[in-house]
Length: 239
Image (cartoon, rainbow, N blue to C red; front, side, top):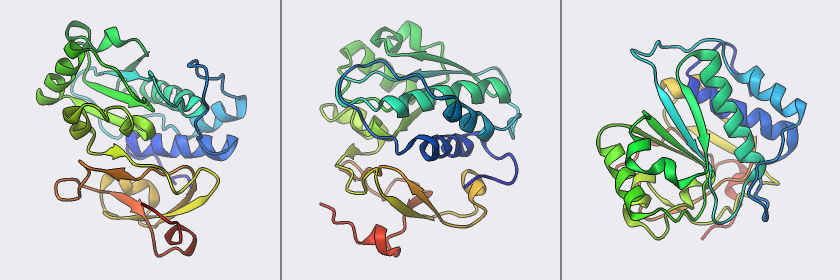
């Protein structure tokens, strides 16, 4: 599903990644090497077509984004490559930010991290952060800076309770597998980040994670969730 007009840049990132999925198959993990694959021309074109030419809001000052994609566990190669490209192109086209890409733990040390306004954990898994990097990331967020996790990021901090709390939950399997098409509902249809869906639920072929503690709706603002009233989506066995 594509928007009729440019909308919020984060929502369009989701659309860009959806377009990438539709072009090349689901964003599935591939064990083995840790170098993202080269995207096909069709995948690049779909991502770039989904990115608006301008941002919907002008930043008060230049912003810098760190996109971190290291994996010590499962490696979602195509997903990492697609999100790295989407985030880079989105920042360049809209002028909302500039993006740096890295898989080097050194960028999460205090002196380097201080240069950024937000960190995106792009499909990171089983990270082994040094103690100094853990403290730097906690302080980064406590100072009001941003942390975003894409897909497998919830599989990053299973051995670090404070880090898991930052992400809001821990990976607990994906019973809605990458070979299926699943239904979604809008928990807040009027929220700006849901503007792209024009008030309607949608379906997406992808691998959908479920979460375990510390996930809870008690202090989370959920904007989109699985629509279990859909027969195929609701029939999936979980737990």
